[in-house]
Each structure stands twice: as C-alpha cells, then as structure tokens.
Image (cartoon, rainbow, N blue to C red; front, side, top):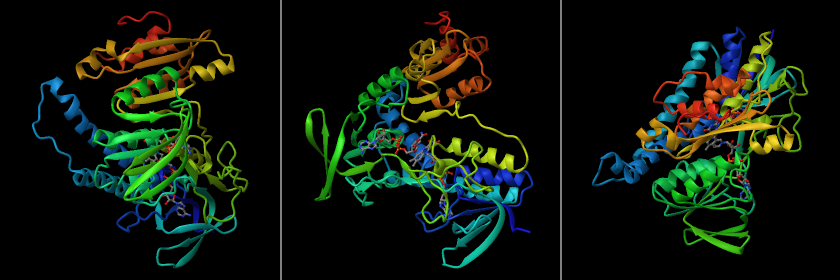
Length: 467
Ligand code: FAD
Ligand code: NAD
C-alpha cells in the first residue's frame, strides 16, 4: 500500500486548497513545500501569501490611507497637521498580516489532517516523490496520485537583470525600506500598476515603461482609457510602446535606455522594478512533459500525460491568478474522490487593485466584435450613485455587455471603488447563465455601490432611473 493517496507538491493557493479538499474527502494527503521566508523559516501559502496577493494588498491599503489623508481627508472636514510615513511600521504591519495568514494554513492543515512536509520535491517515476529537506536529508514517499502545484517565478529580461538592490522584481519592490525618490517600473500589468501605485502614493515619482501600444490591452477599452487617465492624475507617468534596450547601474542610480515613438530615450531612477510577467516553476521537478512556453501540459481535468499525475495553478498557465488555481485544485481533489466536478474558465474574474479598482469578468467588446456576436451595452457612472457621492469617490463606471438577442450576460466591466467586491455579483449571475434582466429585477439595498451594477443592467434595455 502506498504511503499516501495523494501527494501535493506546492502549498500555494492551488496546492494547499487541493490538499485540504483531498483530505476533507477522506484521501490520505501530504503537501510538500520548500518555501523559506526572509527570516529563514519555512512558510506555507506560496507566492500569494508570502510575496504576492496578500503583502501587496497590505501595502496598497496602508498607502491608500496615507494618500487619502493627504489628498481627500480635508474635503470630509478632517485635517491633520503633521502627517508622516513610517515605512518600517508599514512593512512590519504587512509582515504581521503575512505571518498570521501563512501560519493559518498550517492550522488548517492540522485541522484537516493534511501531513505538511518541508522540503523540495522531485518526481521519481509515476508514484514516488523524493523529498530533500533543508539539511540535505532525503526521503522517498509512495503515493497513488500526485498533484503538482509548483507555481511560478518572476520573468527576468536580459536588458534589465535584477540585482536585488537597485533593480528588483516584485518581491524586492514589496520590501523597500524607504520611499525611493524616483522609481522606474518596466511593465504596466497588474504588478506594475499595483506596486507603482503603492510607492507613488507614498511620494515616489513613478515612471512606467510598457512595451505594448495599448494600456491594459486585455481590459474593456473604455474602462482602460478612464483608468489610464485617472492613474495619470494620481502621478503615474505611463509610457506606452516603450521598448527597453538596456540598463546601467552607477552611482547608486539606474539609467534605463528605451525606444518609443519619439526615438531613443533615457530614464534615470533610484530603483527599478521589473514586472514583465511570471514563468512556470518546474525547475528540478523531474521528468514531466512541458510545452514550448514551459507550462506543464494537462487535459481538461488537469491530468498530465501520465495517469495519476495532475497539475494545477500557475504552473499550467492560463490566468495566473490565485483563485483560478484554487478552483482547479478543488476540481482535481473532488474528481480523485470520485465526484464529477468541473470548472468554468469563462467566469474567472480579474481585478487590478489600483484606486479605484479595475475588475471584469467575461468578454470585452473587442472579443465580441471579433466573434461577430451582436450585443447591447448598459453603462452607469459612479458619479450618479448616491453611495459613491456619500463616500466622496465618484470616479468610474459599470459597463454591462449582454447578448442582443437573448439578453444573456456576456461581460461585466467595472472601474470604481470596491470593484473587486462588486464583480462577484456579476460572476454569480454569469455562472448561472443569467441575463441583464435577471440583474435588473434583483432588488439591491440602498444606498450601496452595488446599485450601480443594478442601474447598468437596467441600462442594457435603456431604462436606467438615475442617469
Ligand atoms: P505559488 O503561489 O507560486 O506556490 C507554489 C508553491 O510551490 C510555493 O510555495 C513553492 O515554494 C512551492 N514549490 C515549488 N517547487 C517546489 C518543489 N519542487 N518542491 C516543493 N515545493 C515547491 N493573484 C490574484 O489572484 N490576486 C492578486 O491580487 C494577486 N496579486 C499578486 C501580487 C504579486 C506581487 C504577485 C507576484 C502575484 C500576485 N498574484 C495575484 C498571483 C498569485 O500570487 C499567483 O497566481 C498564485 O500564487 C499562484 O498559485 P500557485 O499555487 O499556482 O503557485
Ligand atoms: P502581467 O502579464 O500582468 O503584465 C506584464 C506587463 O509587462 C504586460 O503589460 C507586458 O506587455 C509588459 N511587458 C512584458 N515585457 C516587457 C518589456 N520587455 N518591456 C516593457 N513591458 C513589457 O504580469 P505582471 O504584472 O508581472 O504580473 C505577473 C502575474 O501575476 C500576472 O499573470 C498577473 O495576473 C498576476 N498578478 C495578479 C494580480 C491581481 O490579480 N490583482 C496582481 C499582481 C500580479
């Protein structure tokens, strides 16, 4: 008999969720993870909890409080004479949030009877995993099934090699111990915009160099245009169509050379963040089939070419989002336990945690035009929302795209405060194959920001009340 029914490799949001679900369903489960944090201790939760979603949101929230006090508090009749930033305290709060949550995974493992193993895992044949502990000792475990959830690591580019001092990746950018005066960012994706916002709010002069000619190329065009304008107002200097050709480090500053439609340019900064995407992490994993982009190849139920070996999360590609990986982990666990679970990629929500936030689910107008689908649009501005007015933040809008013939919801796009929360209503409605009419007939509490979603749904049929 094998040591385990399931061994999960990686305790990020894809792996730890898979392991807990397997154990809940009665499968004898172990989860192996090699993460060592900046204090030299092993830490569960993967990229998301240690150096991703959670610490970035902690700093986004702290920096937003500061920004609010500086720029908006006075309009609420609140003044503060000597506003100061204590970066060390801000970082300590972030570290504490991370510590609580990563330790929480350990507690969840215990409660659900998942065996947590610290070390680096390597596949040995189809049903064995070799684990090398930090002290170099090795053990080989046997298992009926393996779920690989080894995640991803930041992509490096030869023109801007990171040195962990002046040129850093997202992990370095989450750990600055002071506010850089001039901050450069390569890549205007989720990380570039979120971490660029953090340091800009705290006082950095931020310049972002993005290779593509369009801002947030995969988002709704109207929302992207609004978001770009708003972020510019907040001080993010975003250069599109900028192709970085090299970097030099001298005298404690970085000179970035790039080309754009004005020709050769140079940017001199105190710190440079490289945020050009992430690549799958399969190094040292052993014999596993990967595709030309380095992702592990899987079928629709996340099984690799080898029966009994599955892969979930960032390591298989698709949206590199924590919630996508977690849902895949649940699906694989439930299928291993004999259930017929499936998951839909059509309703994976995207959120970019700028202020205000950008969130969307489903198709954009560009997608629908390309597919020749006729659609109707309902659009409602937060400026017409009572709750947004009371809040003092009326930037942005909700846009709903529905099938012209059937009224079925095809895409919902939001730029505005709490967009990350508001989008869930759209996800639920779309998961149930709902129509704009369904949202329009749903009673929304007053006064709430969610009324903007309701109004946009009414707008699909040209019957908005408040705009
Ligand atoms: P990971 O979280 O990368 O975990 C993989 C785990 O596998 C790690 O713990 C690693 O130690 C372990 N491992 C790897 N190889 C081995 C091995 N051989 N043996 C043992 N263990 C191994 N996503 C969102 O949805 N929302 C956000 O707001 C968000 N913000 C982000 C902010 C930043 C700054 C970054 C960098 C990412 C962010 N992401 C966000 C993306 C998100 O973090 C990832 O999509 C998610 O962590 C992927 O989960 P995963 O479980 O597939 O892999
Ligand atoms: P990304 O793919 O979101 O953005 C990278 C950006 O860099 C793109 O716009 C790309 O065009 C640009 N780029 C690539 N090469 C370049 C070059 N040489 N010069 C200039 N620009 C270049 O990747 P990211 O921001 O690094 O984030 C990594 C992953 O983490 C993403 O898949 C993202 O989904 C995930 N993430 C998600 C969130 C969130 O959900 N809120 C937050 C952070 C990260």
